[in-house]
Length: 130
Image (cartoon, rainbow, N blue to C red; front, side):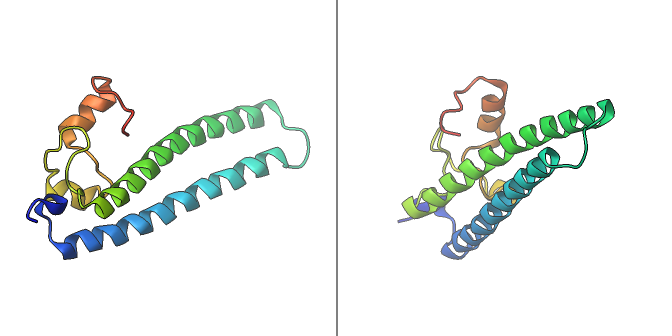
C-alpha cells in the first residue's frame, strides 16, 4: 500500500523505530538522573543556608520544566512507535497530512506538522493528542 507510513521506505521507518527506541531510553535515563539529584538535595549534610535554599529552588524549577519537556517527548516517542506499528508513521495526528521527511529526520517523534505544532504550542489547537 503506497500510503502506508506516508509512503516512507521500510528501511527509513525501521531506522526511525530504532532511533525512537534509543531516544526513549535516553529520556528515561534523564528522568532517573533528575530523581537522583532530588534525593541528594533532600539528604545533603547539615542545615541549608539561604543561598543553598535559593539554589535548590532554582534547580527544582529548572528540573520541573525539563521534566515536562521530557514527559511530552516521551508521549510523542511512544505515539510515534504506535504509529509505526499502525503503519501511519509520517502522517499527522491532527490532520492526516504527510509530515515532511526532513522533519522526521530531525525530530523522529514528530506526530504533526511544524505548523500544527506551532498552533498547538500557541494554544490554538487542543494538546490532548500530544
